[in-house]
Image 1 (cartoon, rainbow, N blue to C red):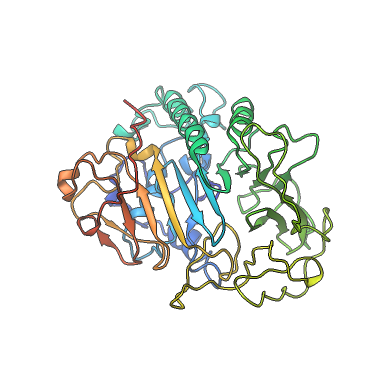
Image 2 (cartoon, one colour):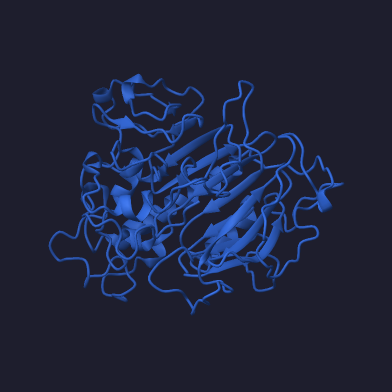
Length: 449
């Protein structure tokens, strides 16, 4: 899971507003900052599901190539490995495991860095000072001007909140997880209402250049809902001075182990130390307590809650994909094992998702469905509405379905006006006219008039 500020400091170095088909890698950023950095065992196959941060828009302006970061999802480029998945400013993805499912809601929160044009020029996407007087526009998709910029982000946020609340309420998944860039201190009143009233189980964020896990401490204003700040992936500086041996929370990543009953969150530093281990349980909308199960053996049982030394050797894999191990290596059917590479009845590898671990044997994916809205509703930015448009599917084994809004020029691609979505099951680019509509998908309502 990627929480934004993908290209620090100022985003993709092209101007926004270009046609999606013009997506290219002339600057080499995609190749050298993403594709060749995140490669190797455990990183070559998983989908890279993400959102945009304020620096993807330009840091103190909105005219960097943020829309090209979306277009890269759909592009057929020599530099692309097909892993990058940011199909819109906000969208939803449901991941199914053998006995449970997780629904992720990806939300843009850059409204919290979009002020009136003359406010705080160094921390304002709509800054009059840094957005050039001539050419400060992203065209018809918006924002169309510096003056319209804060209103554009405000309309986007209002549309997202409505979409998010309805989506979480309708979700039948075992877990509902929200992924966004800004921590919930930004928009605190909105987040309190959303997570408590609508049953969100976990909020994953970034922005601050350090690693934080907030759960049951008194200072967590979302309690009992936990939230993660995982902003220590890069940037120019960290919030504090890092230690040479990595015994700090300035740089690192979060590792999630998921089961039907529990998610274990491990904060791992740049030195490989496990800085903390936290286990969370799902909850129902409106409940201030998490759900309990009789006879359940926690993944955190026997693990210290505080800082821990890094493991010296990897843990042994379970003997089979249908069994797990509890405390002291005892067999425990309630623990869903994630250490063995999953295969189907024909011995075919089922795939994996980047959000959960760097080991390709973790997180078996039986299917992945995406519900996308937001930027696709904007005129001029629908990335598949031209003849010959192609899609690069993430992996051969993950079934991906995009819920599509009405296509502005459906006739140009040979699709009927009630075309409801796309199903991709091949790693090769596929022309749109070769894809059959997904009958079980619904069409979201347009966000903007």
